Length: 116
Image (tube, rainbow, N blue to C red; front, side, top):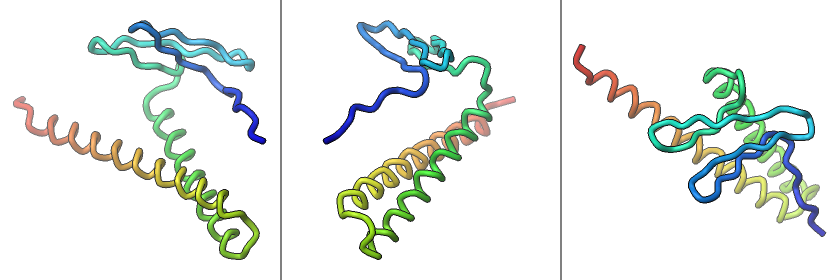
């Protein structure tokens, strides 16, 4: 009934405190940066604003898809399961966005309190 989802991009696996990356079929690869004792996956040559812009566009797409699925559900064109899955995905995306916003505001406040 449900097919397994194959990764379309780089996959980061963490085992035993070590992080490793694998390349996708498209030939792109991901690297791992060690920041403050923890490993953070980086996307090759992309800068922070590019990654943030991509994340924002994907989030907007998820929210729009959930809204469209909800409207189709009201019209009787989508099953209840599809509507619930779309709404839960939108909720998770929104919670992630709020968490990122909170961290950015917190970092800004911390920087503004630094002595020059």
